[in-house]
Amino acid sequence: MELYSIKMRGSKGDEHISGAEKIVKKENIDNVVKALINRAFTHKKGKSNFINIKIEKIDEEEISYINKLSVVNVESKNVMEAKEIILEVLESLKLDKDKGERILNELYEIRNMRGAKIINIDTLKRMDLYEDRGVRVTFMDKKEEDSIERSKNHFSEAIILASKVLSCKNIVGELCISDDLDYTTGYITTKELGYVRIPNIKKLGEDIGGRIFLFKGNDSEFKETVEYLESKKVLVVDKEEREKTFNRDEFRNLIWMK
Ligand code: WAQ
Ligand code: MG
Image (cartoon, rainbow, N blue to C red; front, side, top):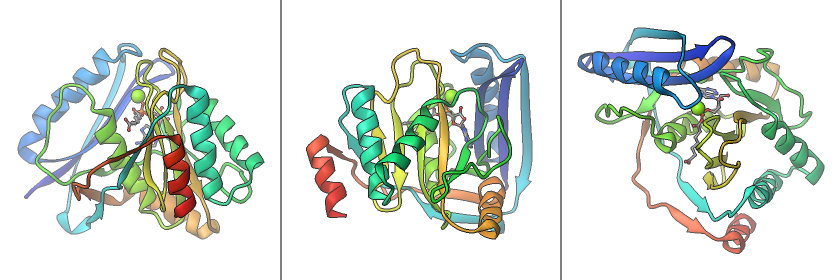
């Protein structure tokens, strides 16, 4: 089977509009590229006037297969509750309240980045030196028939990215808010809890959104981590686990039991 990586990035002037990462069979390249161009032109954030598409062949031997994260849905009625949930999860990483709040504030200040900020969980210093670009995770997709969706499925794309990110041994968690104005569900991941889905993480129409990866380790491990995120070819295997939904109290108990 001949596999190709397709990367798309669309922008309008200095503004990042849309990006995507796919790994597809040769015969599906045309259709996937068509769908991605359409996405860059019809995005709610605006119509891209610069679209970069990169197609490269990848060797099957280079691919590693990883499991999809399990999913926990937490009920959250508004941004305040969403923030409380994030802080509870950060506390489960043995971060004190002050550090948790600083990470949370950092997350809610991000806008218009193409990639993610990597923050050292011990020092809270930003480790990547890419400024507005951030580190972009690439070369990942789900291991399945190529599905060619005309519009983006936020959840399925996010869980593929999050599964790759958390498969790094030195990444202990990820926080994410979509930059799409009308997509208000976000998530936080940890090795213990998996993918915690949080509705109403931002208000409808709010122009914020970004990602933070929480790193724990030394400088050489940091280099390996970035190398893995940017260039390791990964396909995500779906275990088809049932998703669980928790209310706030049940979720607190879950954290406490882990
Ligand atoms: N690598 C690193 N960072 C990225 C990447 C990538 N490949 N793609 C996007 N980002 C960063 C960038 O700063 C974006 O502005 C930000 O994340 C948000 O990206 O369970 O749609 O593609 O339903 O807008 C979460 C789904 C959806 C929650 C997230 O993110 C759910 C989403 P978007
Ligand atoms: Mg987006």
